[in-house]
Length: 352
Figure 1: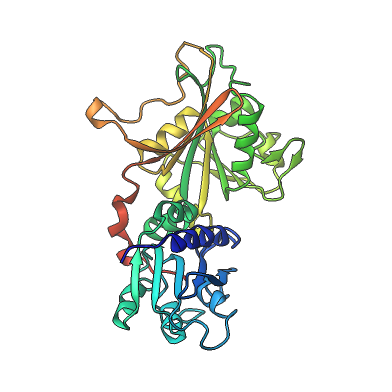
Figure 2: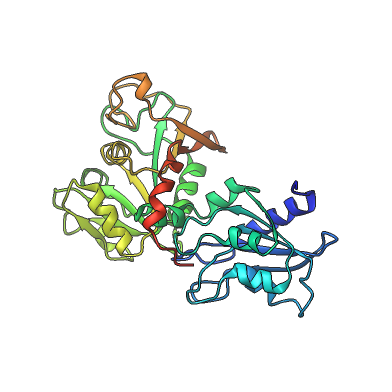
């Protein structure tokens, strides 16, 4: 049965509600309950680990019997296991829900399977509605669950001809104030910000997230990777969070350790050597490329060798959005093979 227009609007609303929830070990999930006439009768979202899931939060706002024959619209497949809370699939069945529409399958080996349980109880189920929006919202949680590492965004600023700096090494400022403000806002959404020791020694970055002259309330943990020593008076040592230093070239061990520390979203800030290394290692999930309408020429490229010997071996990306920022343009792209690792989730236990 096709998804109705009222149900599409309900999913868009569920995605808005999901964003109210905190990022953490559990995904952000939103739910909307529609009456048989297609009217919204309840809304909910997941408020954090240990609290009722979005479906149960929405059902709690109804009187007994109000959900009978209703439709539940949820951004993630209702869970099918008992953890700190009971199975949402069972709660929906017991409430008398007759139809469930969800955006994304739950990849957890323990928490998945809710759709099958619902269908087994005679509930009509539709999957995949506005899946891209749901995936973007919980991309870090999905990556952590599937791969046991943070979701990694590689950012760089470049000239129109692909240079990250002029031949003398100067790079401030390639982009304008609108693009720089956007970078800081996105830094504030990350759990950690990673740079190489070369960037620390050349630019002495503070690695903070700032709104003008003020620090954002949330600050990413600064991470420095490389074998060269960081000076005692480096700006990164004055960051609100104690910096993490990794004297290694093994990026897989770095991201595994970050995952163990609870970091789900990492922002690769620079420079070209570190950005290229993460891409080469297959550890990059998303790219933010800020492009300024200037030409620099020379050899200081935004990326170095990423292991592409021929055009056939090019790393393909899907553009998710083009964002104008003053005179500059931001390209947001994800690697096309992001979903190829779904089968690796079999041994992962969901935490919902």
